[in-house]
Amino acid sequence: MDLPKPEIILTHESDLDGFVSGLLLQRLADRIFGENVPLEAYHYQSWKQRDLREKNAWVSDFSFEQRLDKPSWLIIDHHPTEFTAKQSTFIHDLSKSAGSLVYELCNKHGVQSPELDRLVHLNNVADLFLLDDPDFVIANDYANLIKNYNFWTMHTVLGGKLENLLSHPLLDVMKVQREVEDPIGFQLSRRKIIRINHEIGFVETVIGNNNLIVHQLLADPQVNYPVLLTMMKKANNSVVVSFRSKNGQAIQYAVKLQGGGHPNACGATLPRSVRSINEGIDFLKRTFNPPSTPASKSAAALNSLEALFQDFDRNPSAA
View 1 (spheres, helix red, strand yellow):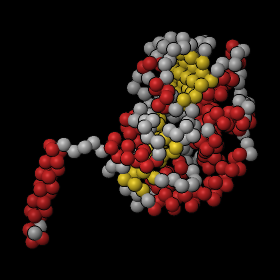
View 2 (cartoon, helix red, strand yellow; view 1 turned 90 degrees about the horizontal axis):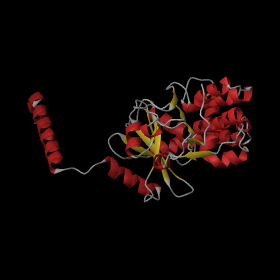
View 3 (tube, helix red, strand yellow; view 1 turned 90 degrees about the vertical axis):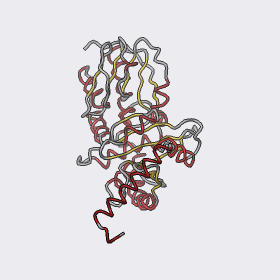
View 4 (cartoon, one colour; view 1 turned 180 degrees about the horizontal axis):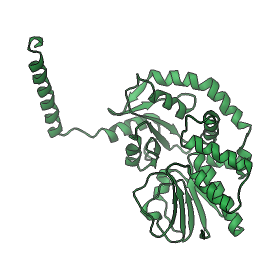
């Protein structure tokens, strides 16, 4: 494959997969072209608002959309998409993380090492949430490291070298949090889930790994919501919401907020007017519970009356 020389490398800022795939693309560009190509990382909302002005670019871990279909653009991703590439080079596989797809391309150009093999495997397990993999627990420690300390903080800590992430001392912090905080956090979160609408519940995460706690709650038979969400206030005062589900319901809500991701694991950044978690709860309730119209109220009343008559027909004595 003849790869176009990129002016810029663009990746997802929010998670380990964007981190791994973005840094690997930088390594690949240096190997092929002998240049340190600039790397930029974005959350979904800022990504959708970014002007794609570059003539040549490499993109990883963002859903393929029509505006990315440009000559001399390389897009590597694993999210579902409705679009077909006609001008760009598009590498796509739903069954692999973006980091794995980029690493396969790296291998073809001689970029490979046992350390990178291990990191790419752990990233794949964490990003695809492969519960049955023996490395699932430690893989989530790696993913949590990027979420806790943020993309560019870890980039600085590692000196931009991906291999330095392997067995990093900060992983001990993630291990202690997992062993001590997660059980406490699960019990605290389980006690109070706030209703957003009939499908969505807001989980207040006080401590612990949000992803693992929400996964446990989705499997809990006493939790009646098919979609659970968490929120986090970032250092810049923006509020980020993460949706989780088991049967693909989550993605529709993230997309409505101009976000994206996987069918069962996705997220979005709330509007700048939302400055706190409580404001976020109110905003989501308004957004996902449209006001009732007179017609819808009448229909609901008729449905209730019809149900009452059906009960009477089945059991007249109860009336």
